[in-house]
Length: 99
Image 1 (cartoon, rainbow, N blue to C red):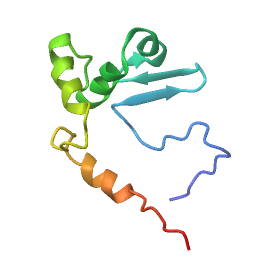
Image 2 (cartoon, helix red, strand yellow):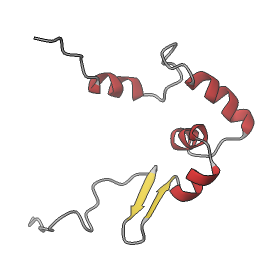
Image 3 (cartoon, rainbow, N blue to C red):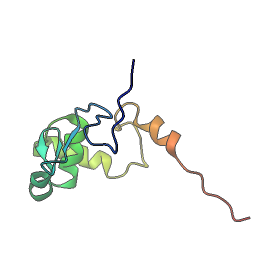
């Protein structure tokens, strides 16, 4: 099977994602179908995090406990989505001691 060469990354799909889409020609970025400009002007950081993790914008009754649990992540990792902890630990950098 021949591999087609394309200069740069134009028209190259690296991964299909249900979380975000990028339309470079239109200058559009979406999270879960919502335009990032709308989210930036009409939603809080916590609402966008909830949207990315859960797939929908939260109601106030959903957001309050979510925000409370995520406010102090060092207390417990149990509220993180499955797999997040192991990925984060795998990417953790150790502090180097001065030589």
